Length: 136
Image (tube, rainbow, N blue to C red; front, side, top):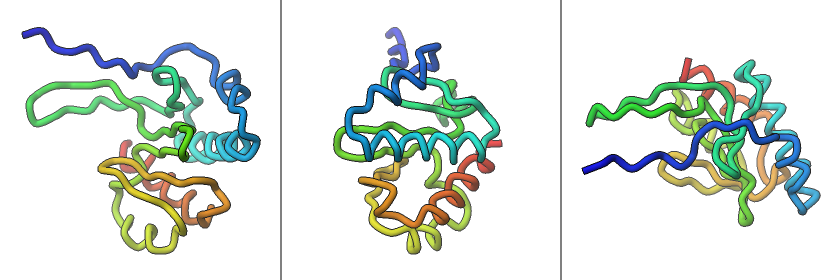
């Protein structure tokens, strides 16, 4: 059986054009702020992954099955319902930080926030920094 091709891949689409295309002013401003936080934490330039995810850096994930996958260190996507953050949840000390973060929801590997004003941005920055370091 042929393996399915991953649809979400790093590409050369313009991050700036993507951000400028966000219609909601608050979400656009929040997204720009998150890009700055993630870029500072990783030292990597933002890249588009698929059509709607902004990612930073590259890591090779290896599953127990032996499957390998190129993926971002950390990233986020400004979805219609919320801002979805990837790769910042599974580092050491996260539980204590999540208690201080503010209003959010969790998925298996994602953190969902409606807007930056709902969370403590200093705590979010620390989570982003820890998530980036965990992938080095």
